[in-house]
Length: 257
Image 1 (cartoon, rainbow, N blue to C red):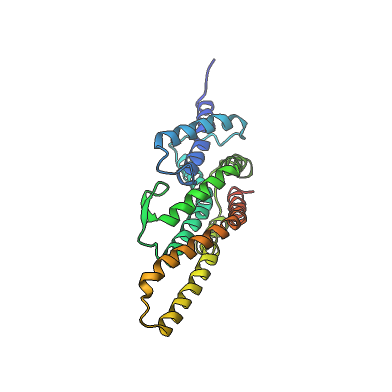
Image 2 (spheres, rainbow, N blue to C red):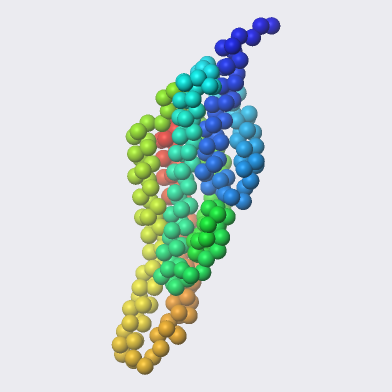
């Protein structure tokens, strides 16, 4: 049996090109890209997924991995994976920003802890909302939906020297606006309640100047903030679901769907 260079290149490319797209997505997608997940685990998971889906994918271009066309294909696959994962990552960042806004309005901006998702210090409420979003994401099988979108992208946007379009990149840039608008929508109930409390304290301080607002204001602000959060927490599920649906829709669009 004689194997030609073209056959060997085709077999290598059948696993190599999908691997770069899958590994790039796992490097930025929420849950998978957390610093608590070791790099070896992410790499092994990318290899396992590649070995599972590669036999079902359409054949890729028979070009050398070290050729100019091969390097261009690798760049495109990495960009596609990063863009799809980043679209979903913005949803979690929106919730973290919403928690930061609530924490600042409640006077908890000084209380921070290490975030295992990003490896930096964030306000406690931001960390709470991130954990809450992660649990909802896993309970809604969002990780399985993400893998399904990734696998389907190889049919709608096959491996080739032409990858993600400028229109898809621009849609991703516009989607970044939800990092702020989504955070405001999440923090709006608690922020509105804190505004009413601060106005009431302002009226009290004018009516009774001898009253020490700083002594009684902080515990009342915390109490009202936590009560409003507990009341508005059930409404977070439809908001997160809508954001995830839009993010998955954008990921499908980036993948040619």
